[in-house]
Amino acid sequence: MATVAEQLSRARQARGLSVQQVAEITKMRTDHVRALEEGNYGAFTAPVYIRGFVRTYAGMLKLDVGAVLVVLDQELGQTEKFREPPSLTQEPPTALDKVMLRLSRVNWRVALPLLTVALIGVASFVGVRVWQNHRSRDPLEGVGPGLYEPASPLGGDTLPLPPAPAPRR
Figure 1 (cartoon, rainbow, N blue to C red):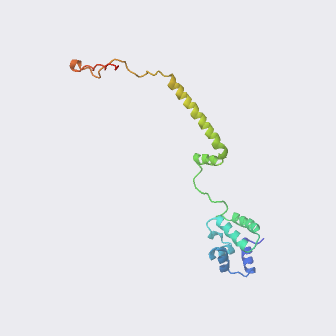
Figure 2: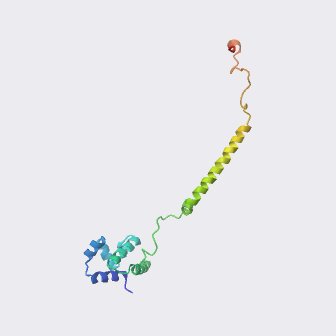
Figure 3: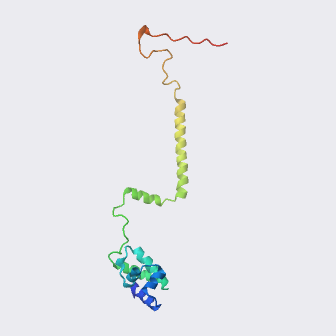
């Protein structure tokens, strides 16, 4: 079976197109077109670019894009650089990453109403308990004696309290 580079190069030559014409039609850089036709995948930074460019190029040449991409995946699997998809981070996943992954899988259209009902129920229960506790408390708790007690015992140097006003008639 022919490699992707051979298929692309033969199809371009069969249509009588130059590398510059292909670059203009596909809006790809000429060095990328040459790299694809030479099978030089090291010129690209990630396999997603290679697949996209090959898809565009093969589609423009009216090749079977699916078959070309299958061969491309086989070729990329044999290279050291593109054998595995690149890791987005070099660090192992933390507990927060695992929790966020689980939360991303939750169907929030179902979970959010259930969570709202549960929160309303908890808030109602707490509110009723606080109200009952408030009602059963002694209203005079914390109130001091009804007699006047001066803040500091100064002896007879203080003035007496004024008499209470007489009720109006």
